Length: 133
Image (cartoon, rainbow, N blue to C red; front, side, top):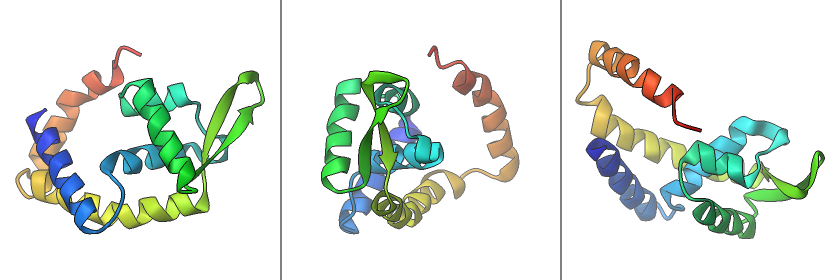
């Protein structure tokens, strides 16, 4: 957990220096990009990001104000909305990735060899698979 906190703090500083949005934008945009044109409901974004729905709702509002996402009615549930990434959102995420990747490399990659990385991945796989969703 400490390594994640270090990585996130460094990512936030690096993104701020590059005049890019906060790390949370990257995470949300990546989940939406993976979802494609089908988009995700707010609750699905919340589950993927593991943050409170109120935080996701505010983040989605900011992403919408920046034209990074659009909201569409859910075809199977008239009360729900689907959040879909736009080309502008893909472009923002693409600009953020090299900075974020560099931070991951400096915090983790520079200190963990391939064998250790495989071992860590194997140890954490069941934890990640059973998130209690």
